[in-house]
Amino acid sequence: MSSKRFRPDVDAPEYHGRYSPYDIIKEGTIAIVLVGLLTIILAIVFGSPDERAITIKTWSNAAPVDFATTALSELNGTSGTAQYGAPYNTASTGQQLGPLQLSKWVGVRIPINTVKDFVISPLRAMPSQPALRDALTQWISASTSTQDAWVANYTKAADKLTFTNSVVTVPAANAGPVPIFINDLTQMARTGALDQALITESGYYTTDYTRPLLFLADGAYLESVATKQHLLGTQWGMMNETGSYPGQAWLWLYSFWYQIPPFNSSWGANADVLVWGLMMLLSALLLLVPFIPGLRSIPRRSRVYRLIWREHYRDQK
Image (cartoon, rainbow, N blue to C red; front, side):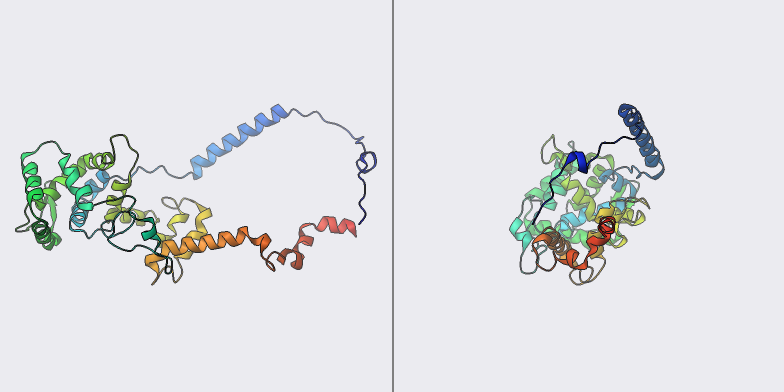
């Protein structure tokens, strides 16, 4: 196979045309200014809204009954966090990929006891209040069966829970200190103290928002806000930011799988790990295209390259 030697004086003849002055500093400055102005204008017109963060304080003031009901679910062990499993507890096996129980492999890395971490410990951090202090002493000194009986009695009457004159009221009998817990925790949340208490449980200086986020997610308020803002998974939430603003369009493929069977039906409990596994498989196929016989030959056999380099082949003719 012969190769043609490159000859600069023949293959690249000297240019003899006209020259025009060019100030790269001036052109670069103009480009930066124009792009900067365009970015600012487009951000003002089409930019994403800067919504205030939803906190437990926001939630408990907007929907105190929902907060109190959620606090009870943390106490009686029926909340999403209490029943989640790894990495928070061992209440369930968690999501699995076929026979692979991935959650169990991870284990309990962020141990959370909803009774202790979401209710009792925050209340113990409150300034000394005689009624609350006595209620905590009564709870701590009681047996587990007695505590369960108190919570069960309160839970039976929870459907009649009301919030009147800034007080949580439930017509529950033989509920021990539980009514005081739910009412005082609600008051604590409405002042913003619960947000801080849940954060500082991991240390005074911390940016770990796991506990307040889980508590917030266990209630119905966050979902109601997400519904109004079109952010639910069924609304292609990963595709949108608040309202009708464009969001992370590059995540459309992840969102797509959640909209179709079996990910949105009988396998929904394992949808996250199934979609993750599928995306890892597709990503691996994309990376391995140059090494997969047949697949790597598609561009050559389809001759699509002749369309891309049509000018070159036209000149060759």
